[in-house]
Length: 373
Image (tube, rainbow, N blue to C red):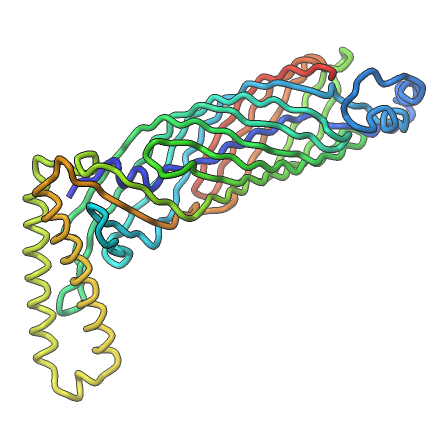
């Protein structure tokens, strides 16, 4: 049984990390005394951030208070699926957790995002996220059932790769602190990705702590920053959807696959019944045998009911629909990140960042323009 859009919609999620490496810096050191003194007497010319002039006069160097960046973001991430339920034509949903096994399911996405931001407070940056992306889901899974010896075998398998278009919007904030070129940033954002295959936009929450150092270059306001940190993603667990059966199955061979599956379920049910009937009363009262018998019957009943309902839906495949519900979570919550930024001037800067380790790999490149507001 080959599924495509349905299983792909199960896995459609991704997370966008948008971090702008500028910060309010405490000027320290004897060689910077002239700059520090000039900040104390210079009138701050912008409305933002709030208390900007007071902070500048205490010896802090502020970045321009507003910015706009364009970023390209790529990510490949594995996820886990639980509490999988599927039904047809608005009928009962069948829990398939016990009989469906996923093997290295993942989502790959390439996204272009625009990030407007302002420094609301001298140590707090607030930003928005607007993006377009093309997620691709890659799934390998199968339906498994037991026999009388509790040996599980696969009666159907599917491997899919589906492409989608998504629109993402979100909000974020980044508290920062910087002293003498060293800095700490705690980036966090919430985003929603709107995809036709899902009942509602997919929600994700990102937390990205970073610790870095900025190295000044000979020209004024020109520098290079490097940092290390972490990337933690949380996605909303519940996903529900409703799609056409014709978008889920290859109807050319679906009936053959269903018939083969039903025959295999009936064959294994006979094996389980024969095994149970061949036990003595004492053996049938053994808790281990009871658990084995109940598990086999439950799995075979689940597979049989699901395939029988699908068999009925195939008779009206042109108008049949599929409903689904599941819980999803990233296989690894955290991965490691490294990054660098070249600041050409206080107006222009370019940065790159890579994430790795665990089951998530990502890359980001961005160009930022800053101005006073």
